[in-house]
Image (cartoon, rainbow, N blue to C red; front, side, top):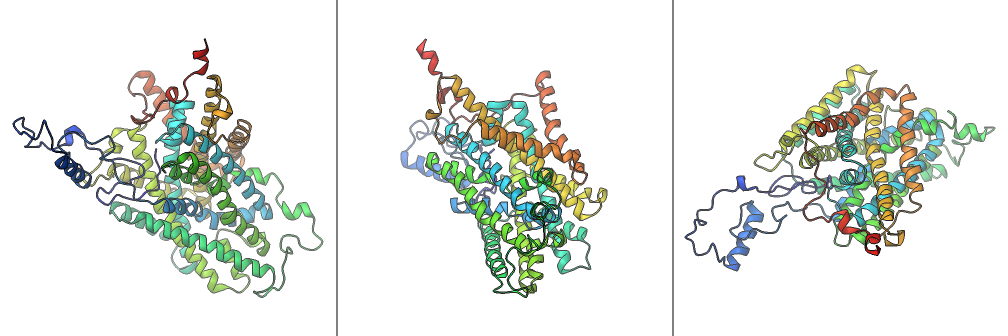
Length: 554
């Protein structure tokens, strides 16, 4: 599937990054001038031909003859590269960062900074593996196509559907987060009603075409980044005692007098790092979008590795640095899920107005991530249908070239997920459950990227190639992708089963991955399902890209 964070086209209305609206022969209205008696038909005038092609792009009508190259009817990309980068970086900063971090700090204390560092190592490994695949084996279907080509089509189906459901769980979690924040401002209204109102807004906005998605989302990404920058400045001044009511703090919050170093850092023990590792993965989901955006530029061999390196640096500056300053000013026992942990920290030092502003920014962040997540979910389902991994009616477009069936199905799934509220112990448990579901399904995609890279590297070695023949090779492969990108993530997901607060999420996560795989496998065995399509007509096969060198030596 292609980049999921792209805006609607001005003319057609479908997400330009993930799909194409192509006119088929059955959909082309008959041209009265093409009756065999018109002298223009066999010998088209060049100027008239160019005019027809221009009109075709604007109105999606077939030009006379010859037809334009494949892709002329495809939609224009409405997102600029700077927008894609901002949306990807800002998309990482969602409610899980503002609210979920409060839960993690409460559960594990200052050691949360080590957990973030571990998550940064995982995403660095994933991005390096992804860069190697994107540059050496360009595929419009990205990691789904790589899964089908290098692992197996059956696994690709499970990966694709888990990617779709990752968004379907993430959207209601943002609605719950919005409800929690609104409850801070208007405590008379229950959180569940605010969450329902939030999801209604998302539903209405996505049933009625609203333009300017790229500009709006990139602007909100800037707001979230500015939030973290402002917090870092204020928190640093509080630590130094230059502002606030506590005087010089230094490291006294993390390391109180007469304390034990190990107990201060790991108040719940060191194993808590493994127990909560899955939740930290949610904070970095969306990073792969930077690589996808760079892969669509004019010089991907240079831009892809650079973008993948930069995203990790930005995560350290934008994500991890604020967490480090946060644990220096707030005792872990005062964190939680009742409000943004950043707002709670500032309120403790007398900055109630600033805390309220930060809470409002969190509200916009939740709405932004839910809205962009919905775009991702619908386009993912549309892509699955085009590639033969989902029923064909999911890719059926209405007259505005909008995949309305996929939109309605995704909306229905989001509402069903939110209805799980009545089977939990309130918004806190539901929110953590949904984050766990999103972590599980999203991690499947990351594991697939690393797995496909390892298989790709093995396959080219078998054909007589060396690492010197690879553009932007992933460092320390295969050990880093296997140990960090696969084994460590698998351990993080397996530990969910032994965490009583998170194990309930597996009832959703596991079937979403394996049920589509079983259905596809049975369908292929019985002949009721055709093979999936992971190679587009304009893409070169692996055999064309890397012909067997040793065959020519014999």
